[in-house]
Each structure stands twice: as C-alpha cells, then as structure tokens.
Image: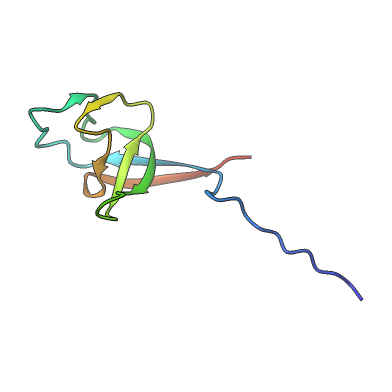
Length: 85
C-alpha cells in the first residue's frame, strides 16, 4: 500500500505582487508620507482592512505616517505576480 503525502502550500503564498497606479488623484491634505504616481509600477501587498474587510493595497517600501500607509484597491491595477523560491 502506497502512502500519499499531501503537500500543503505555505500561507501566505511565496509570491511578490506588482501593481500599476491608475489613480493618484485626491491626495488627502493630512497625508504625511509617500504617495504613488499615476502610471508607475510598485511592489505591493494586498490586505483586507481590519475594520471594513475591504481590500487595500500596501506599497512596499513606502513611508506613511498619517493617516495610514494603505491605499484603496481601485487606485491600482495588478500587473504581475512573481513566485519566489
């Protein structure tokens, strides 16, 4: 009798996501930190907002102090997902 070993993928998956900024308008006056430029591609991480459960985009490497370093998912368009080894 052969034993089948089930392979379980790690959580989160070992991928790096990239997205293009499609909307850099309406920067809040109280925003302190980096702001994306329209048309630029950034390494990102998609996360759910803890309170609203809406998807948000965190641009990796961006500094943001206020109000928070997350952007609405509608501001970005996914362009690539690279699997890491």
